[in-house]
Image (cartoon, rainbow, N blue to C red; front, top):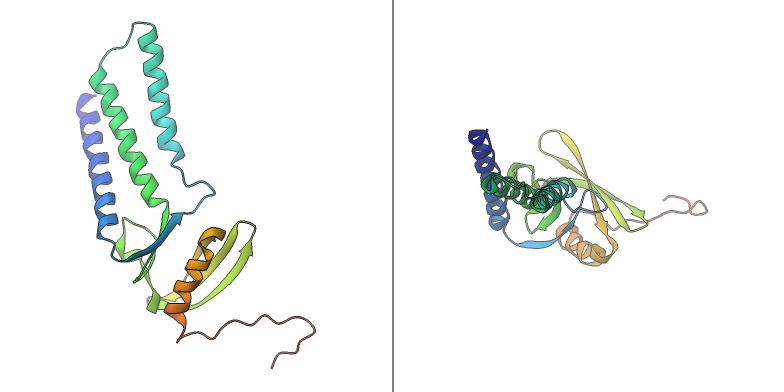
Length: 177
């Protein structure tokens, strides 16, 4: 059991170090925000650490707390898991493109690969759908919170001003020309 715990703790430590290293290697981060879910807080790692704390508190209260090194190892695993989940749940916009997955740099979508995009307003922001090509046609949905929209639109304007014409919205009364 202790060997498995040690291997797991080392594995999660390596994963957290690789994640933090990949974050530091990102060049020219223009902006970033919590993404994917409404709350990008790492819920499962937090519940894991919370259950450890509650379990340890109950055992300490009953004078039955044993193996503090094991408890500390599990806490370290939860902390490393939380750091990794936190940074992987963030959206990063760089001068090079949109970072889809921090731990897989090849999944960064360069601005030059984007062939088209659409906008879909929602209650708390706008969902941008980008179409890009790397040999095959792909689609990337990116939710931009209302607070980040002006800065994001500014970056889109800089990156796409020579490639895309501004969008026009036709109403039913206006004929298409």
